[in-house]
Image 1: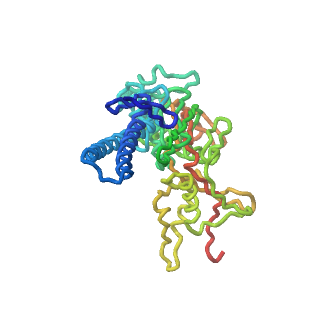
Image 2 (image 1 turned 30 degrees about the vertical axis):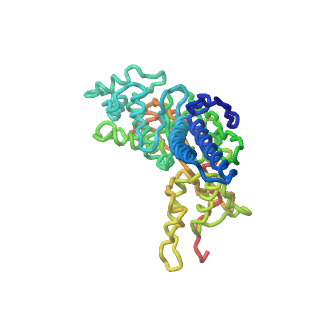
Image 3 (image 1 turned 45 degrees about the horizontal axis):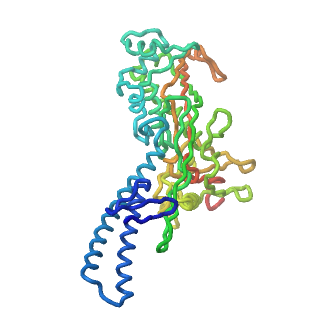
Length: 447
């Protein structure tokens, strides 16, 4: 004998073996079983109570059997809930059109991911130093592999599209130099100009229910965020002697280019304007938390950890536990120099000790208007909710005659290297971040 079971907006039926029809999710089916077994047990107990008697032997056996079934159904529900959480995480991390996630956490290799995407060996032996030396001097002796790697990649303007093995290692050097990446920002290789990702807007909404009350399904909502590759150029100046003679040219180039790109990745992630070809950073993203210390326009001195506490509190109010706070070097060392009433270093509150502190020169210390133009800001948040999308190929140009307002490569006997990388970024969940603005330098008690 079958009966209809209605749970919220879902409808199903059970057969004589207690199986639920498959148009309920596994988690809903397991929870429905628990409720059905519980209701059956309650009806047995209520019947005995209403009749003013003890349970019969048969009823006791039925209750024991129902308890075993409820335990099994609860375990089934726990497993299903774990699978549902994993599926939600995978939906969030999955790239549209791909069968698996290529999103990289800090420390995971962009080079290795790109090698898999382009079906190339991860450790392909192209030497960046030999490649640049050959491009500049025309001397390819001992660099056959390097010359072959760009033989079909020359561009009309005189530059070269670098091999994936070289491009990706420059990106890894940039990521290593990026404070925002160290703080937890994710990276995804972009094979095309655009890339669409899933983004969770609202969380699951569990609820308590009265006996016999219908369950309203609490479903998280998702939307899509589209990364569109924008051009970022960096310039490195190296001496002709270094290019011609240095045995460690490859290391020098990776370090110089990586540092330059990494610093700009930090700036745009934190302060990007969103205008023209510049991505919008955290401070220009709608929906972020704010702690405004400007007051009447004068700001407040950094005389303790309390501004960070307020930022952490704002994230917590929005149900996020921040893992890091990023600030200027001035403010970082100001906090280190603070002392308590006994002259000992001022201890940070527990909430601040729980987050990592990072510093970057990408955060200015001249914000505000005269006479108050020495303010800065801090950004605290859960930085895994920020993602860089980076194309897998870079373009490199080399010149011995280029010039700018500071001088010329020719007169200074230098080689100027200009690299183009195309990338974008997205703040996946704005409420995971709080910007603390109006922070002025601590002038001490005598000021």
